[in-house]
Length: 227
Ligand SMILES: Nc1ncnc2c1ncn2[C@@H]1O[C@H](COP(=O)(O)OP(=O)(O)OP(=O)(O)O)[C@@H](O)[C@H]1O
Ligand SMILES: [Mg+2]
Image (tube, rainbow, N blue to C red):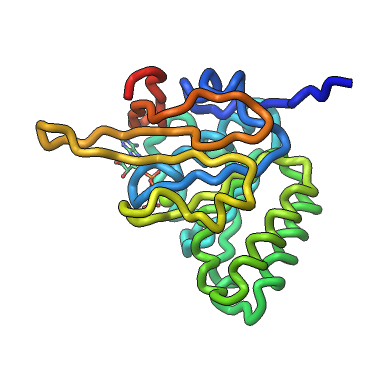
């Protein structure tokens, strides 16, 4: 019997065409990049697409960003209606819990409880690299999180911050099904180009190499074929 991979719309114009029609469902996806490359925007666009499709989304901030802060920050984005929050998109700030937790399993259980109660089809954890504070347990933590996320019927985006010399957090890349890289490069005129690359996507063919992308009030748009 041929196994049919289910895909869901990413919400990012251009991206679904690079991945044979959308993001695998269920699966885990690392979106990695240096500061300001569009990781949070991509996650929000992904959840907004789910909201439009009648799905439930969960946004977990690990970065001490309150819902009020997020609403202010996103108020001029055209794709994100503020009515989504509390309805199709549930927002939760895990930063306090992460700071206080003596054991990463406390955070794991809190996430498990959220997932069991809400049963979201789309999840964003922004960002996963914050968990590096659990130092010696970091690899065990990533493994346990990936096992939990594999058990749920959801596509999960984990964002990962890197400094510009490091392309992606390797420990996270190993435990996820897909890796999207967001980068930027200086132009000869001193401007900056933004790029998106699908580094890996388990179970599907995808376009390789980096492609130009833009960010404006409508979110990210990928210009496939333009490097
Ligand atoms: N409404 C907007 N209009 C135009 N450009 C925007 C808008 N929102 C965001 N941007 C641009 O997109 C960039 C990336 O934003 P975003 O917060 O998604 O990046 P990030 O990778 O999550 O950053 P960080 O690592 O700091 O969390 C911003 O720095 C800004 O240049
Ligand atoms: Mg961000």
